[in-house]
Amino acid sequence: MLGSIRWAAALAAAVTTLPLTAVAQVQQRPTATEVPGTRSMAPPRAGARENVINWYGELQSISRHLQRVHDNALRRDPALRQARERFVQAMQRAMDAADPDLPRLAERAERMPAEMEAARRRGDVDRMQALERESAQIQARFMRVRAAVLNQPDIARQAHAYEEMLRRRMVQLEPLTESLLARSAELQRLLQSALGPQQPR
Image (tube, rainbow, N blue to C red; front, side):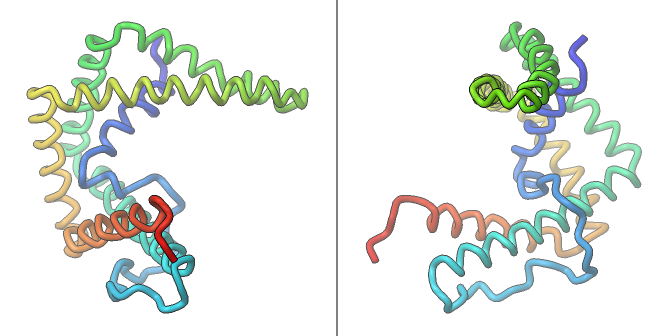
């Protein structure tokens, strides 16, 4: 049996590569009622490090807010849930066809948390590191297959259709969705630039 680990890791990741949901990472729910993402585009004056901290904090705030809107849209709309399920199933079939070894790797991934916990209890650092490397390799393989599958014309069409349906539902619940997505994309560019190769001081 493929189990939930595989599709939590692979298919959820596939869905989050869509522009709309890429910024809706699963994080803690926001505790404030304020709408995030309304800060000025001007960077803070305290320096590069403070800029990065502020941008990252704002990105997290936007991501949490959009995740809540995303979850509410799915909870309230049975048709959206069905569309998501159809897309997930299509992704699963396409990924299986692209790499028939994925089911074995998924089963391996399901066993690894217990092995990691056992190694932690023994204090076996070498084993923990080996498991971490193996897990990273499995995740990387799923990501490569996912990226290739999302480039297939039929899957790309389904992804676009689901994304547009989700976007419409989210905008109904949160009219600022589009501007929050635009701000999120800008923050990601700022962070990538700031955390890239060292700039001359």
